[in-house]
Length: 222
Length: 362
Image 1 (cartoon, each protein chain N blue to C red):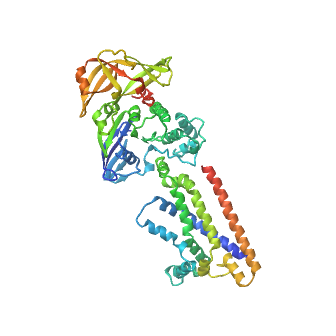
Image 2: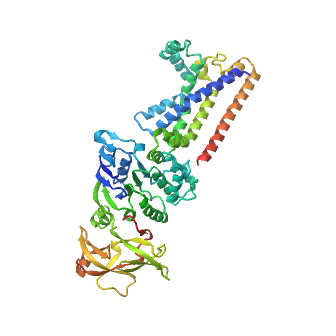
């Protein structure tokens, strides 16, 4: 059992969720409430990681994060090591390829808040920030919750992009999905089996727990 | 503080209106759906911005397109009651009221809920309340900010008739607590007449008639322009008692009338909305007639509009009653101001929701 790989996966998923939570809320709300020219294009861009093969997406990120790219060279200058094949690079890639999972359900959640209720909040003297905190977010929460569960689960399970952008450096970019692949390549079926089963158990427990919490929240709200 | 409004826009509906509402006054904006009356209300709240205009509440400028002032909705001191209630579904009735307060005050919130007759329901969520109860919460929530202006957007159109009747009575009772200008948008002329002090008739975004409720409701031409035959007057009456046959005896200035289904203790002062086209006029006191309500009255004025009918203004004591009769009938009776006549009213022609408590206000 490669505990390092497992903890790396969990850490990656946690960082991804932490970064995407505000992105999910703010972008989801913006896309739900605002009408603007080119909205369709923005929504399509957000969904793009869902339809592209991970290799295609991983390839572009490799190019975008590489030492010769503006982002890659800036990173090298600031932190003294390259962005690709690093944990930070993996987090950045993970954040980008999880955008559809983080934004779409949140957007649907905010769209479910009736216009009159949002207007009532403003007419009650609630500033946009207080309205978000006291009215919109509690009502859109099931959507945001779903977004975060999907992001977490999807990060644990991602393979192609992680391999393209991160390589397979133990303790840095070798996630549990990659470790399982390694074990299989090494004909270590038992090791692969244990890790696969652990991943299934953790994923199932996470999703069940969040949905149970979410249902309780839903009952409290209705 | 007085609310003064002046708006102009070309879209989504052409709009050009200017009016003022005094403190404590209830102004009804009436008109067809699509006439622009709701747009006017939303402009006052800041939920919609006209292409040009001014909105001032007392000394505070909320909107002045010329000076580039357009205060955000939450910075305007308004209470807004929506047609769809628009309560916060995840909060209790009390929570809804508390949320609208700058500094939450549970005792004050409970007092407001009592004021709208929701005692004991403070801990219910909106989904556990009836439509009428939800709208009462919405009203308490709108008052919770101590707003400078109260805006009511078709507030009673989503509830059933009996609930609407009760809510009308409650609003009338609440008037003594409402010191701010109140603007009511409605398409229900009965509601406007029972609740409002003054009315604006809006058509295609323009003000076509303005006046006291009694004036507008007596103006057959203005009402016909809206496509309604609803000339009507409010007759003050006092409940005298229930008769053996179940009818309620009401005393008016010039005699009793008997109406079905009127609730209330003897001595209760009411206003009965009487439709002008339901009144029959007779020179002599008629006999052998099924209609039992015969009130002596004096003709004060005859007004003739574009149509084939004449509006006869009658004084019944201090009150005014209106009758719509044909020109031919007016000619045959040779009616002239000062004449004594008898106004005949069929008991069954007064709808139950056309009877409201007397207003202490007007």
